[in-house]
Figure 1 (cartoon, helix red, strand yellow):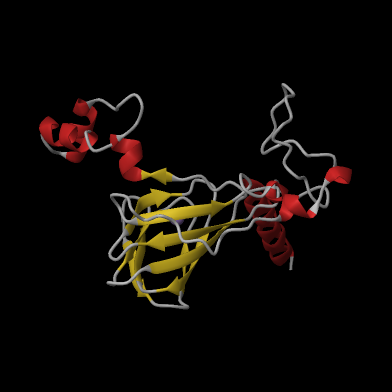
Figure 2: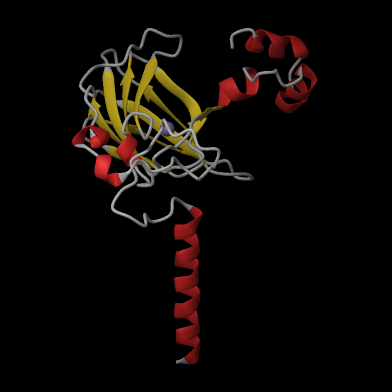
Length: 218
Ligand code: MN
C-alpha cells in the first residue's frame, strides 16, 4: 500500500513537471497581447492588454481560405495563425497554420522548438515523416490522403511533400502560441554570419567546395 502511494506521488510529481515544462496554465481568463507596450520589463510571452479593452477582434483572424503563394524554390508555403496574428492567443498554448503545396512541393526538414504539431490533410496526398533523436535517428513516415491526421512530436525534425500532380493543402494545430521554426538547411547553410566552411565540411564529410556551393543557395 505504501509503495502504491509512493508511486502515485511520483506520477503526480512527474505530471506537474511536464506541465511546467511547456506553456504555463493561465492565471486569468485571457491575456490579450499588448504588442504596443513600451515598458522595459520582459516576461515569457507578451504583457497583457487591460482586459476591459478586449474586443472580438483580438480573438479573430480572417483569411485562412486564401491559398499561400507556392511560387518559391521548395514549392510550399506556410500561413501561420499564431500570437502574431491573433493577440488573444497570448498565454493560451495553441496556434494554427495553413500549408499550401505546389505539385511535388515540400516543406523542408524543420523543427518547432516549442510545439507538437498535429496535421490534417484537406486536399491531395502528402508524404510526411519525422526522425527520432540520436543515436537511432529512425525515420517514421507515411503517405497521407485527404482527411488523414499525423503528429510531429515537439522538437523533432520533420517534413512534408506533396506526392501528386495537383495541389495539396493541410491544416496544422500546434501546442504553443509561438511554436517557432528552425528550417534545418537555412539554419545550417544560411546562418548570419555563416558557420565556417571547415566546420560544415567536417560535419557533412564533404569537400569545402560542396559546402560553399550549398551556402550560395541560401
Ligand atoms: Mn512543422
